[in-house]
Length: 76
Image (cartoon, rainbow, N blue to C red):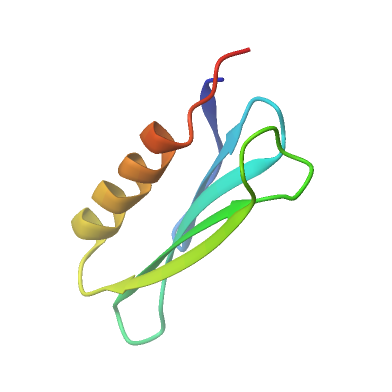
């Protein structure tokens, strides 16, 4: 299932999977670092999950977010 960009502003960038049961988000922290978060709900066809990682820069957080989306992409 494809992912679509659901929100992008100065603080948060979030993608949602087309089934609506998974999101990946990066957000800027107050100290200038970034947090990447994967949230797959229990109702999803694949295994539910919640992961959160901190990064010093946006590029590293974006790379992690892309890896999660690729790993959690499921076929219709």
